[in-house]
Image (spheres, rainbow, N blue to C red):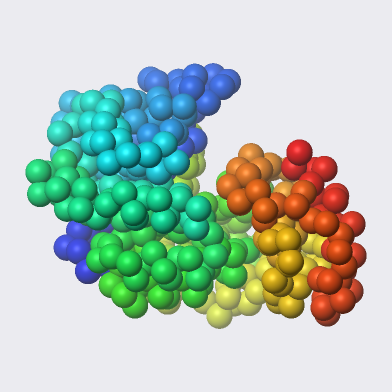
Length: 374
């Protein structure tokens, strides 16, 4: 297994991390197949994966407990454990300690190595900041309950930059993949955080698994180059010096074996010129398949009613391209937006359509998207 130093910390993390959000289940999210999940986590640790990422809400609260079980019998010594505080459920200072202590009990641990504020965005960020989260984090670090302190993020780059600049974070976690270079924090955020000395952890490298099962025309591009979809998508990320580690929500031994093999073959700058050309072809094909020809130029903004037009079009294009395979992810991202930014807030005033260089019927598109996600 390959390892990288996480930002300005001295922590050596495996380039492949285990995301415990998609553990094997027998049906519903909370119905985790615990014996299979424990076997899976321990198998990954035995292969050299040393970073396990969970959260208070994953699998309706079951994920942390299962991770705690997997780390018994000497496996805790092999793992760097990360979990996240559900910022939407924190309304007073006492909630920070209450939730962290509950998480440690679930994990059967007296500390976690990495602690994140989960899903910071422009609505939750001011509340958490003004509650004095930084003073609380310093106390929790001093008493040994948490190690490195960071955040995960789903919003625009401008919000990301504000959060990065607000505190001496040691790491952050962003959604990033070969079709999301200009989405959320994006490449700009990746480089900005790394330049500030933060370790950058990548989530959704396969976009909810959709990039591992792309449309036929994209799959043909990978086949022409002798690549498998998941392997090229992962190695494209590991090719970048700013990436500290890539999380994968693996739920089978086969997935662990395949991803470990990709990790062992990856190096910074190792992607060949031929492979870079294949990625560009695939990205162009994804854009061609998008039903709405939005280029995210932003000329339609600001909307007088606050609608984030490019973001709505982007989510609709993504879920359509992948034939609904990532519906849950796109739905969650849609409802994470403030109500005023969602498609249903559109008043069809037409101002955006006058400015759109692609001549998109934006009002009709917003109606379609509102109906779809409702």
